[in-house]
Length: 275
Image (cartoon, rainbow, N blue to C red; front, side, top):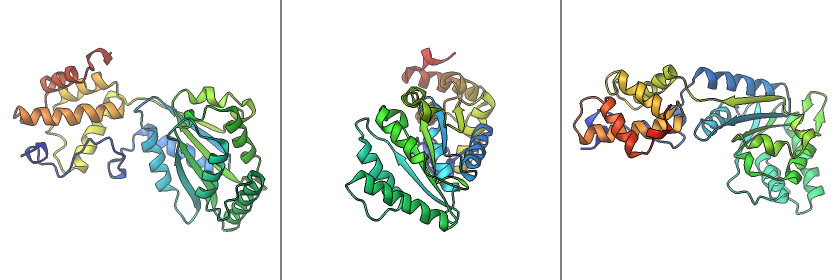
């Protein structure tokens, strides 16, 4: 027996792997989606989402991508995984994401192909959207200037391509490498941690999706303590809850109470993180 069977769950409710089924539409996330879709639909060109580690930026990016249906949008998500990205690589990757077929090694020719593809997308009645995660890793003035150049492509309806940058607070400094680009940010959203109330709703939501009785597995004092030790950061909430379910199972607790949470917080080294 493991904790899934013990707590009558059909699957692990607190995995940190992004899974749209577990998406919790908090008031903040809902507002962010509305603002970002408005920026895209009105062809503003550049929107920015900033948040600390574990605040839910990637989750939001995946959710937005799902909402940009193929009938009306040509949308793609590009995740930056290292800081040594060159502008040539980025241009080619960007072109591939948009569906450019002739990937020329010559940057000027490739730019022409990108422009042609953006025109095709526009003629199809669609909007081109590129979501980019971990953009703070592109710490290069040259690359920021390249983005500004792409945003210079306009039609009578607005920008021909929409970028949505997701990143850590360092992203502000990266954008400052090219002040004209920074001035083109049409929408700026900062993701903050959940409130105590939202933390409880988030936990109950994920438990319900996983098939559990969301009102019986964690006690109210336990949820308050989870909020205290996680400071409302979704990734930390998941980690604490997952470990607490295992701890509760090992100690044969009918419900996860504050004693279990305190043990887990000490084990995870989170005692000093709470406020």
